[in-house]
Image (cartoon, rainbow, N blue to C red):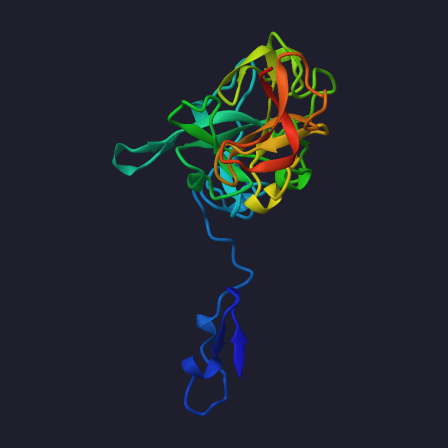
Length: 272
């Protein structure tokens, strides 16, 4: 006879019983499926709020593989990360930042690499690529990545999508002009004449770059340009037709990479 344990493993019931083969075994060795879930730690994995140690802690399951025990934090008047510090034995600590997650201030841990965040759709996101430390955030493509909250296609963040503002690739003089909230003076390291409304995307697998730049969660009219490994943060750039006149003055439709890879569509890139 076989017994099915809560962990999903099959074991021979006679292993714990006598030699009679009756299969009674020792009931004390069985996992109690009605027992409370194993307790986790702040910034630890979870499947339910009840696993998180503090009364004010919650389990984020949308976007974080394995779940994430965390706390809420105030966003106004400025994000306050006072409650986002995890003190560890030996004087070590893991820091966190107060981030808007689905419209609610949420403590998210800092990181140095995507692996620190458990894998896609979570990744180590840096506001400035030159920063040594980033923060674990969900780079979403769909609302499903956000546990039912809204996925903003302009930022790949779990937040409300602005209803007004300039589209990807438009000229800008300040962040508030762009629906992405990011008016960049450069595109892929090159000076952007008149500014460029830049978006963020989660870099998809190589297979999605077979022959064309993929949309990969970017808003309509934009594509995801790969700037690093799969699962990391890429850039939503204005899509164009090679040889056409889609791009504004000061920009060309680029569809050939430095290694000679050619795509059927292109991105509006500084040049003339």
